[in-house]
Length: 200
Image 1 (cartoon, rainbow, N blue to C red):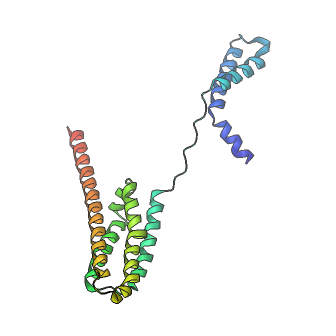
Image 2: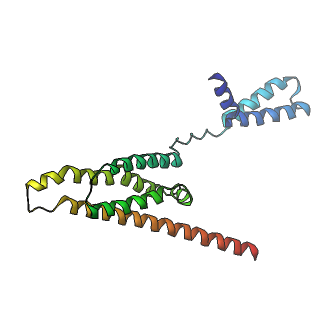
Image 3: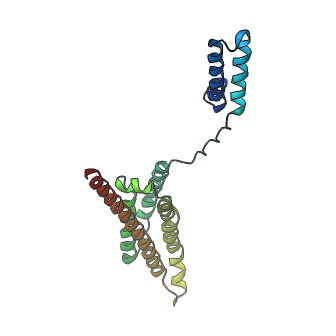
């Protein structure tokens, strides 16, 4: 603890400015200006430099690593797939769910998409919300209400609601994928222009 404080002070602006002042005091000593009072001159210039140094910048807050956040979303997605494998869905809703989970898997697959996601916190939030909240809540709502609707005929079947919800989530994921593709295309165009400008 004391060692880390000492190292922090050695690297501080106060010490650097004070050292510059002390060095100026040594120069005055070797040129004969300071005379026999050279220790006082060196110490005084060190102190003056330390006092005049600009204040230290506050340390940046330690935000979580985006790649670690994506790894957590991938782990949650694996758990979600295990849950979905045990749920019995009608064919139409099952097909919609398969399309959605395949698209989410592609978006979470490590590779060029990950690199784009690391620079787009909104996209990571959208994926996280879909995996951790939207999909499981839609499926769970269907599972909880399907038996009750059989006792109350004439209502909209819960599988219709589920199909619509999964369709909306698929559209949202498609918009996200399209945005990432567009970002990648812009990056490629920018790199092409850079190479063209460099060759001129």
